[in-house]
Image 1 (cartoon, rainbow, N blue to C red):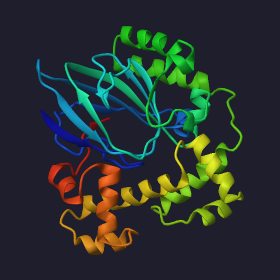
Image 2 (cartoon, rainbow, N blue to C red; image 1 turned 135 degrees about the horizontal axis):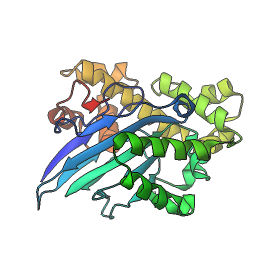
Image 3 (cartoon, rainbow, N blue to C red; image 1 turned 90 degrees about the vertical axis):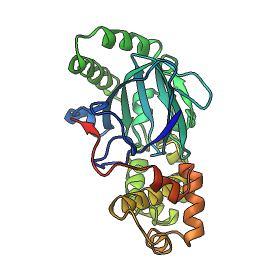
Image 4 (cartoon, helix red, strand yellow; image 1 turned 120 degrees about the vertical axis):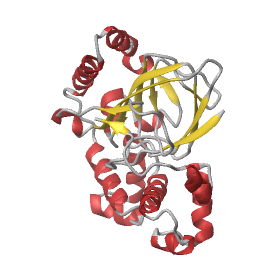
Amino acid sequence: MGERLFLRLEDDPLHGPESAVPAGTLRAFPLGAALRGHVSHLMLYRETFADGHEMRERVLPDGAVRLVFNFGDAPSAGGCDGLAVEAIGASAAPVVVCMRGKVEGLSVTLRPGAAACLLGLPAGEIGGGAVHLDALWRGEGSALLERMAEAPGDAQRVALLHAALLHRLRGSRIAGNDIATHAARLIAASEGRLPLRDAAAAVGVGERRLQQLFHAHVGLSPRAWSRLARMHGCLRTLRRRPAPDWADLALEGGFYDQSHLVNEFRALCGVTPTEFLGRTASVSSKTAG
């Protein structure tokens, strides 16, 4: 049994696993203008494993809420069987996904603030686990999956999904959404260096109110979002500098010291910095499209 790493960073041209995968496994599709403010990425994944073989994929957290539609054998995670259609909540912890048989599906990565509009409940209520989409869409998730499975090709599947998402967005406007998404962007742009009080002041609310809005619209606390933003900045640096001086990297990245960096790697990635480098093989996009 092997284990590879999967990481996707917001607005990063690298959309595939950090470790080697067969060519054509992943394919990104363009988004229409009406969806771009709500969806950051729409990806098709397709891979077949030999009988009796299992691939473990360590998915590093990006803090996003996802919708997943599985046409083949649904991957399992955390000891739980995969669901045919699911909403996966925002998380600041790595997840090990186990894949067997024929894995094929569409994954929709939502931008901060989009979950409440598309799912009809606060992002924080999903937690870090998976919920069957039918529980949120009143059975429409399975119906959409069936229509997509019967479509003659990938482009037609994506068109059906695109139309379904637009239909759910029509007329949906959630109070506080803009404030939370603005603050999330500011924290991400600072790579986690912007203090909570400054983020709250920048969007015109108090710290406690910002924490409430983050829970509702992002699904994480501002502190967890800041930790991920700082780690993502570090991971971007590692792609440019694969043989770093760890002490310098820690200080440049906003960590207290090298020990703090190592502890955050273990907590957020489930591996040490050197273990991460030992498993990575990607310096260019693995995603077609």
